[in-house]
Length: 240
Image (cartoon, rainbow, N blue to C red; front, side, top):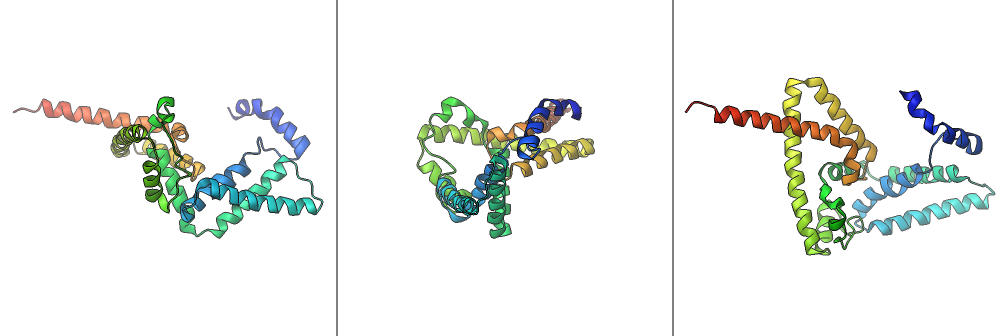
């Protein structure tokens, strides 16, 4: 299975090994770590707009790359990406541990609870603001500013989506509680699958990032619905 999965990527890996000396498939790890994994916690901690923090990180990156170029060092695209990774590590080390953890919890919350309704193009077209570019210290302050500066129709549909998301989360939690009592290991493996992707995404969150979690979440929700329906039938058939 692993061999078949690797076959389509083999030509790219071979090219990157021979031309750039690395087996990496893409150069996206650098931008992802610097601007999202390090950038979002910094945005939450400082209350600045995401665009402002990105510009500051870009300025630091330009200074670092300029120093290397002045030293006569020529970087290929993968080596440039490694410089972004190194700067991201420096930024994360400079932050308090609580700030980094808060960023991860923030991303996990968005990945689990962000309404999928927001991905509908008709609803998305009503959005007049950017949540990441909203100002404010912490999630609540930032969310309040985002809502105040947005279209009322969009806010209405956001509210509808949030109500649906809360109901789904409650059903999923109940389904997990039922499953762990009856089928312990499937419930544990399902939980580990969810935790893996939440850790992998880090502070990055949104409905589309929940896609790998959906099969397990749908399973938990289905268990809850079956259990509630069974309880309802037993209650309705109870002798009076």
